[in-house]
Length: 292
Image 1 (tube, rainbow, N blue to C red):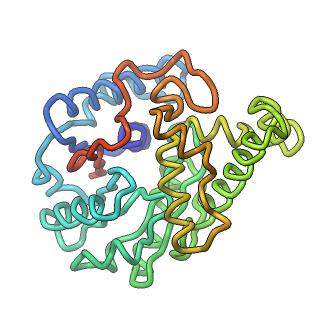
Image 2: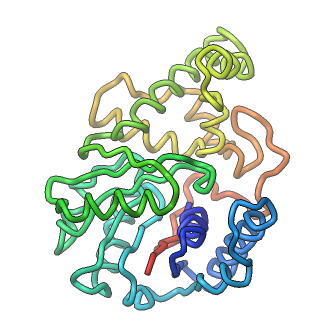
């Protein structure tokens, strides 16, 4: 997600800094973004020369390099403690008038804002995967988010060529709450033998004109990510969001979706680096992205 967000802001004309956990991750992140920029140039989705796009992005392992940025988008894993740690560290190096956002897909913006000195400067910017192809960004307003930040967030989304959906802070917001509800029911149907994964997805694509079925979408998002969201929604909204056994079993086996090569479907284009296995500790600050 961090690479996708960086790619989108580069295409939008911003200078971008990406901070990763170590030198190897920083180089890998830079390689991902530059490959994506090259594909955008090849496809004609931007008129900017590749050299100009590449000049807009830099990578680092030091939060201090965010100091000149006007907006930082946190994109670490969906772990509340990890996010609070990253957000506090970023806020410490920002100017007082800089904006800070979280890319969480379900965690409470107000709960995360409680770790910050300037909660009025903080909101949620929920990007969708894959970021460059997605037309939507969910702008999540916390209780203390300033009106100026809401206006600024709408302008950032428009500058990226996307449409903002503005929601108040609530578990799962609008998109994750609805998307996870459909996906969990699809998993229960698969578990009960109602239909195959292919046919369940086809029913939603052909019958309801969803561009991608709920099980394939789960593979793209990551089964571990979907499990974490479902567990959070179950804890806040009740048992209707309880994760099915099939989801827990697949995550326990390491079948995390596209990133591991197998989830509800088999994927031949899995990334070359292995996905984290269950039980691994997330890195301290992977993928935080900023716009100058």
